[in-house]
Length: 179
Image 1: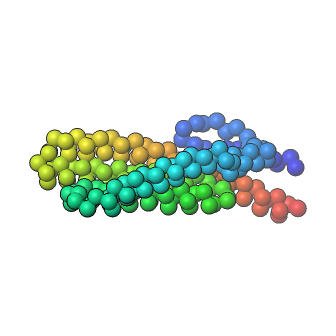
Image 2 (image 1 turned 90 degrees about the vertical axis):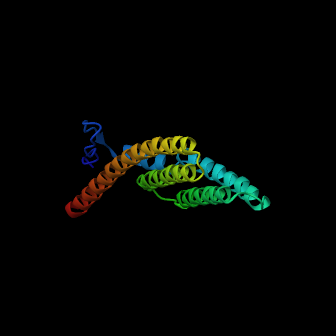
Image 3 (image 1 turned 90 degrees about the horizontal axis):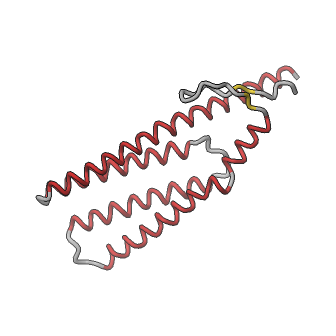
């Protein structure tokens, strides 16, 4: 078992090629499946559910709301349902996701921020509250920029983990052929 060390696949952010031994890879897997790594998804699930319940109950119990408010409440409920679905998917997976959930959550964030920015600008322009709509749309664009940055970071991390997995599979294949 002298081939327990693997080189970390090259990552754009760092150039060191520190070796990974079997224990380090096992620790990486334990960390990925640990309760601490899943706790943020539990919190997001609870907050999203609470938001959908509050906004949905307001929407259903106030029949005299203006159409733009009803559209906004419907959009908020749809966004909350999207986060709930995502969290349930992540929490029901009992295997290593190789950071795929981070890529998906960043994409959801980008979609929801873009919808907010466009929706705010459209409502502001339609209701002659152009300054308020454009300011809200601008805030949505800033949030979109943050979500895009998170997406780039998540994709980079995902690719690094996939390279590591492929390296481990190649090593395993070589070890089996040698045996």
